[in-house]
Length: 135
Image (cartoon, rainbow, N blue to C red; front, top):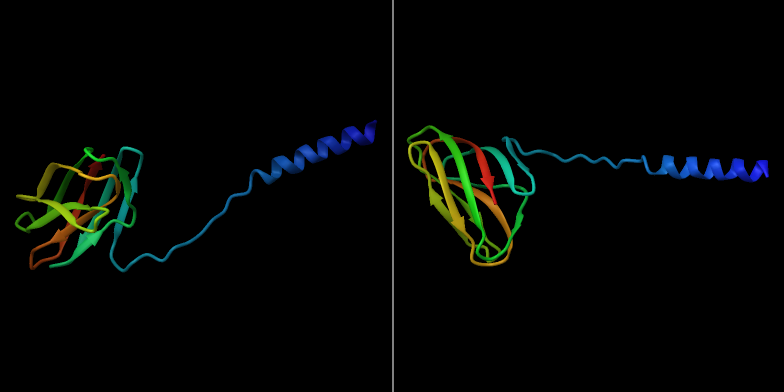
């Protein structure tokens, strides 16, 4: 009886210890800083966009047809021409243009699928961008 009780306790300990294992991994980051933290309904982003370059976030988020995405961001220099938008499941870029170094606009999506936040710098200078996307 003592051996059976000891084996049950030992098995419970081994199973508990097995649940504590955590997998870890590493990724290689690009030369410039591009970061985006996505939560369930909003996310913070920060990126540097070179002159005449388009930069997309490295993660997408699911949306239903008719949902809106609000982009609230600032960028510098203030005189730059910057488009903020979403790459849709059909591969097209739906965007709105920022003015005077900021944007607080919404985009309504027409189809269900995964969308990717994208920033396009139309200027001859590099631009630093940071803000929030709410969906």
